[in-house]
Amino acid sequence: MYGAQALLNGLGLFGAVYDGAAVGAKGTGTGKAPYTSTVSPDAEAGMPYAHPVKEAGPKGAGTSLERGLAYDNPSNLVQNRVSEIQSQIPANSQGRITMGVAVVEDANGVRSVLVSTSEPRGYLRPGVSLQEGEKVVVGTGHAEADIVSYASANGLKVVDIGATRPVCASCQNVIEPTGANVSTPLKPLPKAKQ
Image: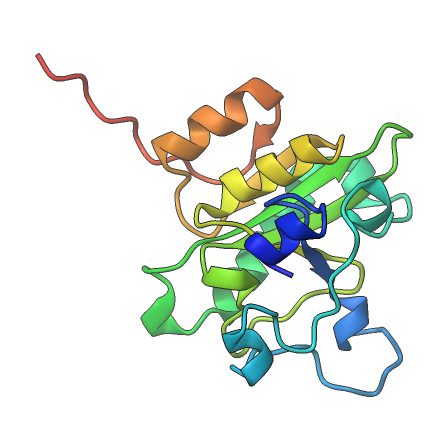
């Protein structure tokens, strides 16, 4: 579900997520290769290919992680995952698309990982794969802002966030009120006109 369809079903614009486990990500025991995107009739109709959409809210926000980097060093987890995703994005697309990664926490202190992209409908370029338990946030364009909007709409706190390209001023302004740490480089703020 995306856009108008998601709104009709009560999910809200940032309510749609899908997960790596549901699409045969590494370690899921499905015997299938990690997800790489191909355009299908479903995708053209606004439905991500082979990605069941989960219900909005903490239940569908991300699989909880066992004690580990998400709790002990979320910045390291975000930096490592951003680096992995960056290396998976085709070279000719690296300067045109942005992917974001964030560690979020629900009201019970359970942490999970959200991934977003500046691509329409959460499209993942061929070669880009999710890790088990990661959820893709389907948004409207700015990867980092989409994560923050989704988290806010679903009662999640953004603990740490990063992106495959320097975080733009617009996204910095969206992230700042959350108090989240930004673990990847920031794009310099524009100079004020005199």
